[in-house]
Image (tube, rainbow, N blue to C red):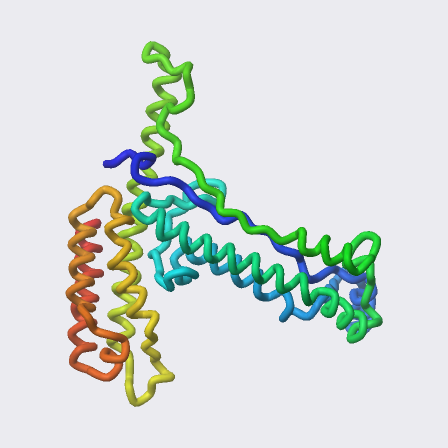
Length: 308
């Protein structure tokens, strides 16, 4: 099995944002009185500015993290990557063959995040004024900065936003420890443990890829099987269902860092199942849906059996 550090690096999104709410003693006291209880049993928070003003940075930061997880399409190319296996400390394992694609998309997410924060800076004074006007009884200038001055409060709020792409190398077993000596049993054991961890993670990554193939293929088959063109709302067949299959076909060679023939066989099976068919075609052609469902189901069953 390939040493993981030779075929992959690690990547994480480190981001922060301003919390648009704060516990309010006044609101808590009022809620307790309304419900005939005490502050021991109720706690109330207030929203500091209208949610619509701060939604964009939050959504973009979340989308970037979800992109690495495999549940959101890339900001630059609109493609899914199947999900990267977790490492440690928030990192995910990034195969070298996916590096350029992933970094391009993360760069686009970051650019959109910074643009949204700039937009937020421009509207914050108005948003704070609206909070003062529409929620005067619970408004407290101190919630927007220790010594409230509108311009400094805006600067303080904006400073809470950050988006960093954290890259790093995966550790090479024994790397950087000049004390390692073949005659030193403790050091040899430590190196062996490092190697076992690397091998274990590579195996875990393979299993993660297999699980992704099974999940995507089964979902694809199930959507083809249950779709009813006479009642589309009951069992929708979305374009994204096909896009995820097609995107997975594209990234599997990169995710398959050991060139496992069983995973490649599954990829070829997905190619055979989907072919050049579009979601529109599958929605309109029941025979095509039936054939595609059977083939996709076979891909999931076969790879599951191969890795039992």
